[in-house]
Figure 1 (cartoon, rainbow, N blue to C red):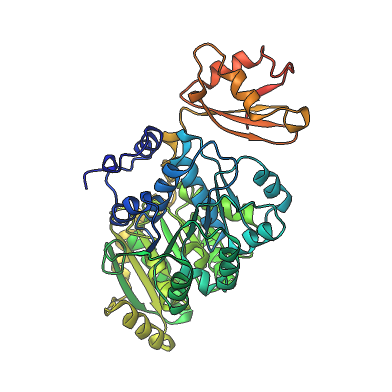
Figure 2 (tube, rainbow, N blue to C red):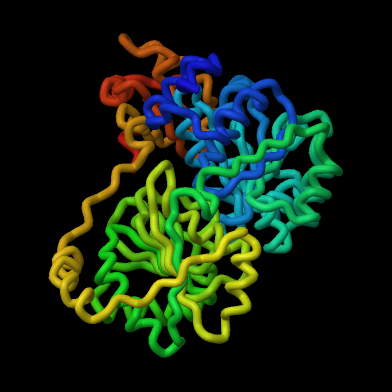
Length: 478
């Protein structure tokens, strides 16, 4: 494969994937995209970090008909973080085609989601519980759905969502394309694909980020009471720019975070009991490199794509063998190499044996760093701790740099429609309909993305221009 041009994608999608720095398709992308473009069912077995989201998002964005106002694709994910991230990926890939994606999940205003679903929406990404709620109450219209993607199917099963997933499938049109992706294939996932899919093509990707891939992973024998001391020694010697520390429980996360903060570590934490907005903020700040260490439960191990994590430490052995693979899959992403270390107490040898049987290899044992190693590394570690991390660039920055979102203080209540905004803005000298991006219309406000660096020109013109005879206040959206 020499690049994405082989797939003869439309100009809008090609422009976006080029701006997102997708150059050569990963193995899963090279195998999925051509088949998905032919509208065939797919079962994909692939580890996290293999580029799976783009593998299904690129063909979906390519095949969606922009003119159709009702949802054409539904993507199911096990966690809220993953739903939000997949939505962003779809928006970025479909940016120049003006594809509108909406994320729906629990612990967020149902009414706000209902309003969003009333508007033109091409792709809906959501967790099974909230998606089922919207279908049952008639707020998610599914009659025009042409694509169903079930992402991280094995985790849906682990989290007890499989019955909800089946109920959702039963409510959808039978004439559709279904794609199911899973890192592992327990019998329930196999049964799901056999029952609801039409002669799917099985695609298996073994190389990227399986344990034998680009991650060196080790076990370290540590008793419970010594774990924190050993952790400080390891982080001093390894001195990572970006590191995830996994704990088995929420309480474990809180305790470790407290200790690290007290020891002046640059860190954040994430677990299921935190309010959703706080979880999103923490993930966003970690992605942007605002702090170096993230303390997390396994909720963060699924699908969260953070670049350049050089070290993953399992402070506790994971609850099940599959989670081990997902934890170490947080490092060594996108062709880079990474390191993963798991702390093992004397009572956990049996669990380790299960993990080794599952991954088909023995994990190398290493000793904790000695006092000389720690002493030699201390100055460099303290220097890094006292230096503000360099902000990481967001891969979407390039796609969004020429886009300005404008706010207008009028919407549906003033009897305005999307076509009124498009018609008025496209008449501004030097501006065409191609320069208008996603339009989000609410009861009392409308947000319009202006593309191609034309935002300031439109803003200036619209201060003196009426829409349907109404003069609206307009400014750059906050």
